[in-house]
Length: 213
Length: 266
Image 1: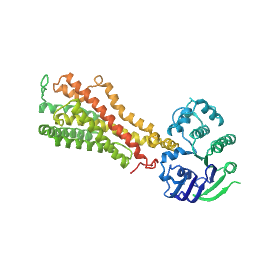
Image 2: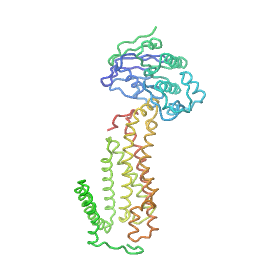
Image 3: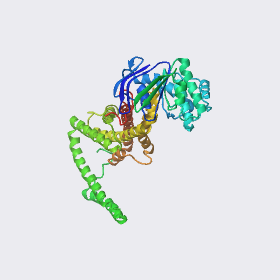
Image 4: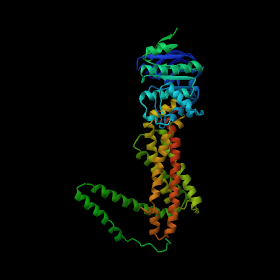
């Protein structure tokens, strides 16, 4: 899905060669400050590399329309924003940006139920806690039905039980719909449980790529 | 002036007598010990000298009534207005946004001015200095204030909502979608003072132009017609300039890869 060659971004990241397979879950692990988040931002062109090239489906991403790319390769940041408005507005805003038709209320409610977020769709999103916002944001990106999900520590604000639930939902999406997930996590446990490929980053360089057996 | 009654001419002694108001202020500040005398005197002197010079210049300009002269003055006013916007806005304006400001001011004010002269009051020649210069002044001055306000709001809004804008970009929003609320806020903030000023007009205060016309003997009914049309002209110019400003201005904060740039494109 992604093929990175001699990619350099400031003094933060240098990747000689990295291949991220399609329809698989790849976990990126490493210490904080090692460049994991930068890597995700490069993949959906929120930033551009200083040199080298990143191929997406065989094409250099600098040649693709960045907005179309981000609708296909959606990034969920570690601390997601909530937009002014209701929970429903927040769930649908991704689809709205990409000009997709809205989803029915009962489907939205069912999705929220899967991450144990039993909130009224018409209540304000601003009042949610950090963990609730993180789950809301995951639901938002899943509703966009992207080809690639870039997840940055998607369970960092969640307790173990809820984290498991959220991971099952994301992994299930990838398996059922044959989609790709690239997930940054510092949790070795999560990486081992879900990662089909585990990439370890240290000080901005790839130090290990491991195929899970 | 061919008004209903001729205007009372102010003689030199009477003019001097008006400076009593200045002396009152000086006495008050001296008593309060606010030590602002120097500033007050300099301001009053500047006002006097500038107006005397403008008065003589206008006599000459109105008499000459030449197309190039009117256009030259228009250019001078536009230049002054743009420089004033740059210095009034207290935050850094990126190079591209500076160009957007010039473009917005020129297109917005000139379009309005031409429409006003050619269609609304329909004078001939259209560059007749007696109309052209004061009307251009009012339109440009008000647009200048609005554009300053809009620029400041746009820059501070994008800075304050950076996370929200990037959050929207990550979800595949276009720069236009991502900055929609900031752009709308800046537009409203810049246009509202003009809209609000219309509310008190005629009740809380009599606008300067109308007062001047009435003083010079023009029928109040004619004066209000001028005031209404110029007010609408100002509203049109303010809306146009600010519309161009925010509509093109937000783009200067993104590069060609639709990435939010820290300090705007240089």
